Image (cartoon, rainbow, N blue to C red; front, side, top):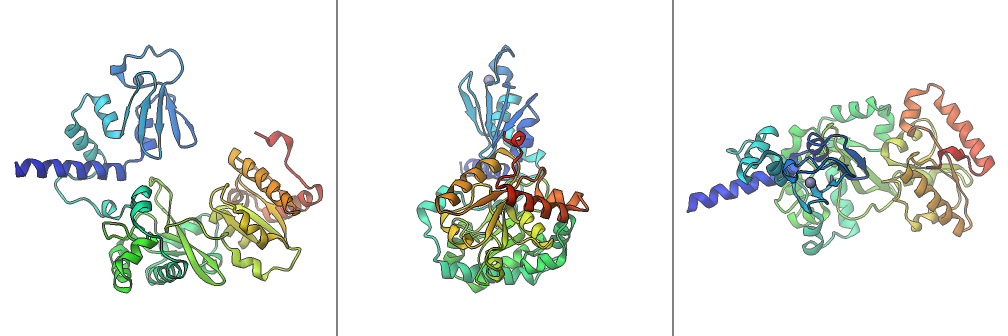
Length: 382
Ligand SMILES: [Zn+2]
């Protein structure tokens, strides 16, 4: 009896670990012909043979790639990736778990991996049981974490960014910090030696399993406000890790690189862009920029900071970027401010990496946009 429940417990642990490791997009796409993607969803004709679909009609199979859940609307059947594997291979639960674990290189006999223990708590677990940390303590934890990581070998992180066209000086000025995976336990130990566990958990740095959650995401981008790191978001440098980003708990508290505004004269041009890479790319080429996390990440309370500048929004050229830029334009206008929109065909980082004369062209485009008021070519609207 004892042994049976131990076996079941192992199976569940293994199932949880599979869900931490599997790349849902890759996994489901493997089984679906002509899969289409929209946002965080995959749509396809249902591949489940047991459903005996005719193959005609519109696709009835949908996957929420964020949560890894599938649903066939035609047969009203759905579930997680393990249920899907069972259906596709006519397998029992335990066979599905064992086979998937083997495919993912997770062993069923050893203890779960560090990646499993380091996984961030799910949002809903957090919201109910853990109080958020106050701003001042959040800052202290954040800065200590950055200092700790800065003591580790930065090489891999720097070369990752250098490959993306960001130079060392800009990386250093932005305070970007990295630590290699081999330093994970040491970084974790230093943090636990310096802080109470519940503070580390409240900050989102540690999870309920008392592990540092920054295991897959070790390239850290701090948000500095008045010279102090108040928050950080981290990126994975591996190709197959989803999600790409991980952050401390709580919402993004500031524009990225907001401190740069303090040094600028009134009336200066400031760019509003998406993400760290675009911000740093512009900064490197001498264009003052502040960054949003995601196209829709601007908050109305930040308008006051931008009021004295000529703000140029250069968001991504996709639908989300257009939509957000239009919304911000209205938001600025409601305060009697003007937001100029600039449309760069590719993203800014690509533009600067592939075009030798990018800086000059970018300056000219800005000038034209500021003169015209709105430089959007009509053809780019959706
Ligand atoms: Zn179906």
